[in-house]
Image 1: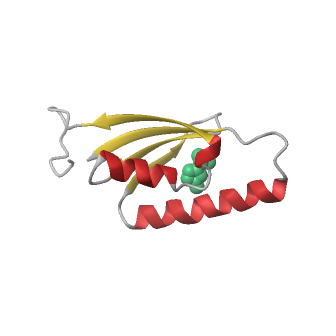
Image 2: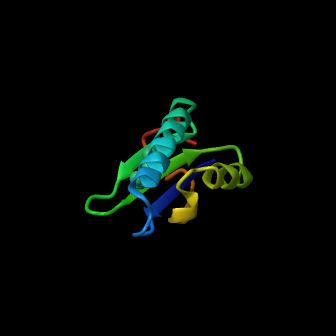
Image 3: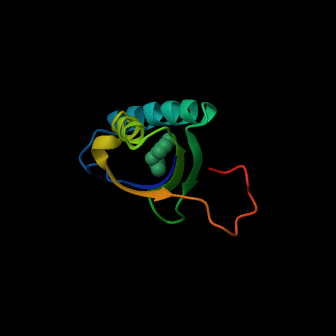
Length: 96
Ligand SMILES: O=C(O)CC1=CCC(=O)O1
């Protein structure tokens, strides 16, 4: 199942810079592992925003929920989720 997810990061202004750097490093490591596993299909920065557009490929809504909740930055992100399905005009027949 494919999901489009928008994540907007809102780190508290008074968060210690070392804590912020540590969270970002943990987030990056997990995001790169999930990309290697094929679960995090796309990760795009939204130009001019501390936010990303991502596409996840997971087995269920519960899997997506569990994945998002384990992100180190989860407590500091506003997350919007949209389920995706095939567009009839898409030429990418292998997409689900
Ligand atoms: O900076 C972001 O958009 C939040 C984030 C998601 C994966 C990552 O490494 O950072």
